[in-house]
Length: 224
Length: 224
Image (cartoon, chains in turn brown, cyan):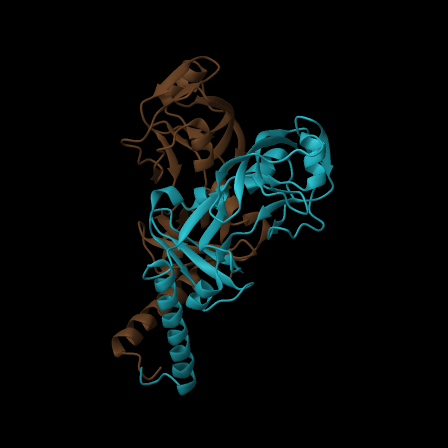
C-alpha cells in the first residue's frame, strides 16, 4: 500500500467510481446488484444475404423463426443448408441464423473445418471475411458457391456501454474469461463488442466449450 | 525488493539453486540449455488389455507397430476398432495405441463423446476408470462390451524427475500451460506426471488443441 504511487491511486480511484456509478445504474435498470454474465456456445451456423437466400430457398423467400437467441432480434431459423468442403466432404443440417445480413458467412469450429478439409480457416470477428476460404452451399432450391466467408468466429463478449463502463473496457478491447472446474481454462483473447442493444454474454464455439468443459462448471469470471 | 521477507528470499534462493542445478544437469545430459517443451495432440484412441485383444483380433494376436509416440516404448498400432455409443452411433477407425495394458480404455474428446451420445463422459487421468461409462467395441474377429473405461483424458505433462526439479513441481501437482496467438488460451489444470522414463511433453486432446489454435502458434509456456 505504502509503495503505491499517487498516479496509481488516482487511476484506481477513478475506475472504482466509474464502476460504482455503472453498478448503481445497472442496479436501477435491471434490479440486479451486478452485471449477470452468461456464456453461450455457438454451434456451427450460417448467415445468409438476400441474394443467396433467393438462390438457396427461392426468390423472395424469408427465414422462418424457430427460437430466439440471446442478443435481441437474433434468432435460429428453421432453414438449414448443406456445406460442401474442398474434398467433397459435407456437413448437413447447417443451421441458418437470422435476420439476413449484407454478406453470407459460415461460422465453423476448427473441428468442423478440419473434418470438411478447410484446414486454413482463419479466426475472425463476425463480418470480417475478406480473403477467407469459400465453400459450396446447397439449399432446397439451389446451390451457391461462396467465394469467401468461411471463418472460425473469434471468442467475444457482447455488452452495453454501461456494462463496458463497469468493466472499464471499450469496443475493440480484449478481456480474459476464466472457466473453472477440473478442465479449467482461461481464454486470453476475448474480443469486446459494445452496442446499446447488446446484452452481456460471451459467445464461444463448440471446440472452446468442449475444451473447457463448460457444461461441468458454474465458475465463470470475466476480467481485464 | 526491499519489502520481500527473509522467508521469501530464502525459499526463492533455494528454488533458484535447484533450478540451476537441474538446468546444468539437463545441459550435461542432453546438450541443451533448458528443457525443450513440446505439446502434442492426442486424437481419440483406445488401449487394449490382453483379454480384449484376444476377443477383438483373435486369440494370441499382437499389436502391429505403425509409428512411435513421443513417450519411449509407446506406439500407434496398425490395428483399429469401431466404437458404438448408446444410441447406435459409431466411430470407425479408432486407433489402438500400444503396448497392451492391464485394462482396456477409450480416450475421446468431448466432441467425439457427444457425437456418440456419451454425454456423461468424465475427465480422468489415464488408468483411473472406475465408474466411467462403457461402450461396445467391434474388432475384425469379435465384439467386446466394455463395462467401463471411456474417458476424456485430463490434459497432462510428462517429465523426468530432473525436469520436475527444474520446474519446482512433483508428481500429482498441477501446472498452467499458456498457448499464445490470436486464439490464446491458458490451461489452468495441467496434471504433472513424473517418471524416470518420461520425456518432457504435454498431451492435450483435439478439442483443446482446436480451441487454442495450437497449429497457429509457437508461443508455448509451462509454469506453476
